[in-house]
Length: 405
Image 1: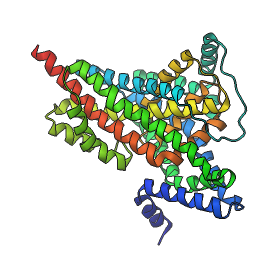
Image 2: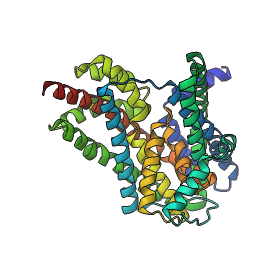
Image 3: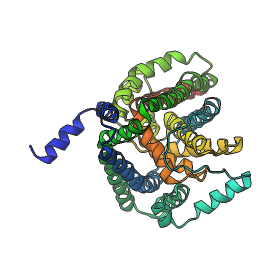
């Protein structure tokens, strides 16, 4: 059997099952043979690989997305896009409130207590300084604020000046980087094994208590957004009970997405559901792929909760104004989440940089995210994907209602 065949068979096994296996093996080894420190190397290599590729991924992904974005969308598309963004922003705010009410701290290494900027003016000063950092240095030093700023400018410039062939090349590069990330994540089970071994061998099984609190906070915020705030948005638009539509979307779309853990892979299922709901094909054939990119409630929750957990851990005092700005950053960052399992976790360092939290510390939180991702990422994807159909249907029903009145 060739190496290529072995890798292909490895990839065919559900990533959820592989990560769960790595978690169990790492915990068992941490209890039975805690002196085998070499096992922790797998976790170190995995986190280092993510640290290396994440800045490049964000830079190329954002530039390519803006360069290829369409224009001239009609009122119906403006409605669905605005609801996608509003829902994502509310999800981030919900995560802020949840993190303040039920603060979570993490077990991180080599962490020094840091101070948040003293005034809002200091926040913007640091923000502007990071934005205009040399773009090459921004990528090499994982300055995500600078990466976003220059990527947006380059994306706009490409959209205005580049021909379609050049934009296609940029998109191909983006796809290649995304594929590289997928290859790295295929080895997440070994990384999780090393990370769990390191945690259990040093702190015992008590470390899972912290992870349990973190999972409950993440899932609680996601469910609150799905079952309270999203239906409220729909009700205010349509003035009718939104829950029959919501439960249909969760049953037909969310259940499948829970196991695939990919909004992109769930697009055909969502398109078929829209057809069953009697929606306009010309509309949903665009809004569903668009939703798989920018309707990222769960990703906004993940970015916000993980960032504030790191902030609480390192001793950063987070003001209301800073938390509100973090919600905006999480919303915009969530819209740029890559379509791979755990994609939202790779944007946590970007949000952490807003509080002057270093990349080394932030990437430890990303590693913890992969440990709990067996649950967190599955729920996140299920809610994101079902929301695509929910708001597509809401926008069309609202358009029909306006036309009839």
